[in-house]
Length: 219
Image (cartoon, rainbow, N blue to C red; front, side, top):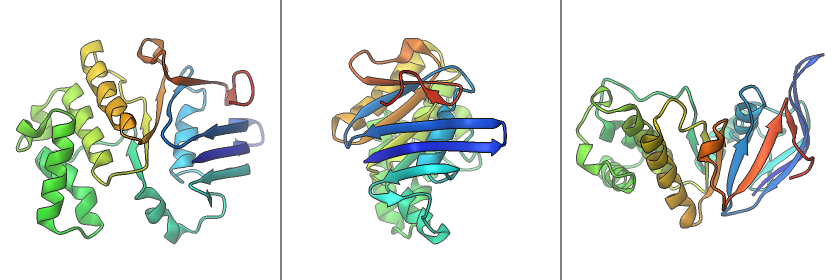
């Protein structure tokens, strides 16, 4: 489903964010990207979402070559992706239900259908009873679970979660990870990046990055 073929991302002649990465992630896998801050995890995630393009090599997502994808094709690619990035914020001037409905409304879904699916997504992360609450009324962990609900409301094939437990206490972090694992259990491919070794699931595949390169070569 995701295939990196000798992919590098270079910002200047001596600055590589990723270096010669060869990596395959199969449909339905749960994969953790581990490594210290600055290892290249966020860049790798952004490349899968076509936020960044490869400097060299080939990146395929669902058979599409993201080095060649046209700008007009990126929104269609992202409809199959659930994105949970560190700096994505909820809109504080509307309820969490409205926040989760937004991706559906943007793609033209009828409001009634959008609300039904948003409530179902909130229920899956244990927050349907808080649907009318405003984001600032929620804890950090609850806000992150709303971000998970917003990411899955379009029923994506792939979830990309970049440091989804950063700045959360262990209880809140576990609830976020439990929600992501539940989606993986029904066949959604999940890629979760973290620098926190304590969140790694021993039963899942772990891919390690250091200074933009895979530790141990091909994964």
